Length: 321
Image 1 (spheres, one colour):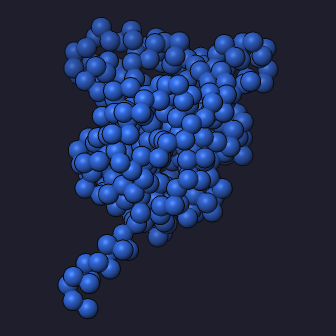
Image 2 (cartoon, rainbow, N blue to C red):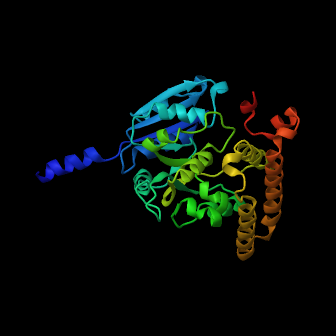
Image 3 (tube, rainbow, N blue to C red):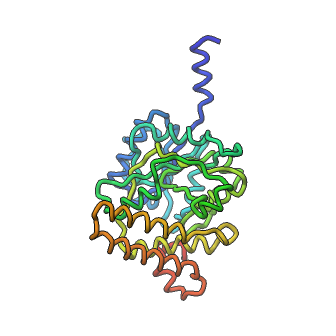
């Protein structure tokens, strides 16, 4: 075999990658995301978009990427797990990378590094089922949220397997569909995402993968810019939905330490604020943490609450209809 033939064979063996993005009222950031995907060192086969409500879709998005495939659904059809499963059904790739429409690749090697991370092995040879990217704060990100991002997405990559559960607790299962790669064969083997999810479909999938003997890779050098400046009530509602997802799946989360991770995060952020002399930010940290904890505790006992209160507490109102 000559060099040219060897190169062609290597290219043929290269995993095919599809990117799947659920969108709702996409704007300029989504357009920028499409342009950045086109610039990646690792080629993207298809960008599969599941758009909620066709009236919000702008045909000019197709000019940003020639490999765009768009499917429209009604708002009532959207579901965190089911909509992503729909996108997976349109993919014929070896690897699927799920992203949100406001996550922008930092640099040109995002896809390449996520693909590499899926080839990592655990301490006992565990195969990686997923690999998620590091989320960097945007330029307008508030100070406390910026430090929380640094806590949740550190500079060091890691591999998480079942042996980490006693030390890492619920963080063992953590992955984020803001930008996360999945091996298609294992995705199908494990049954994909839960089809009706209020939130947290990525962590529920990750828990199933870890319990099945696979691993989760955190690829710190695969980076996206993504952050939100949530109000206190938004933080409350997000954590309410997070707790609902855990309460609905006791087979996964019962007996797994979770609140300790939140306490560790508060202490870490507080120390960083202290070192940086940002004393005025302590009130934001305390108030935000209190709202998160209140939402989390209420979500854990949501079956005992009146239906109207549950709907008010939830960020995902459509889930309850």
